[in-house]
Image 1: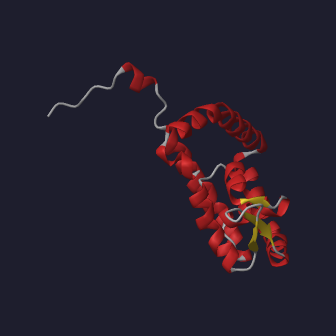
Image 2 (image 1 turned 60 degrees about the vertical axis):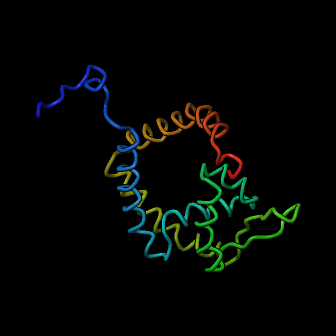
Length: 163
């Protein structure tokens, strides 16, 4: 069987961006999770606790701010609720729930902050501050530019009523 010759577009493309970003995310997450384990948290839990500590929000609003699907956020909140780190308080109507941090949750953040700092410092020393700053700028710019496209897709998606 003959081997297919790549097209000019395929040769000029840097590859699958989604795959490359997922590899980077998994690698960075492993570094942070390694250090967060000492505080009894996963990186995703620490991030979520930090958001909730900043401001108590309805589940749907928190999902928007974290750019997560509501169902994913609800699943990620469950272990935090079970641990007593966050609670869901009644909102303005019977269906709304406000995600609120508890005193125990605030203590968990405080304990995990040092572990996060060690992971952050290792990342900064390994990549260099110029690369870390550039990475943040590129991520922020990409998110801003992709936002209108994602909104357009979500309006067309049958799942959009659930988001």
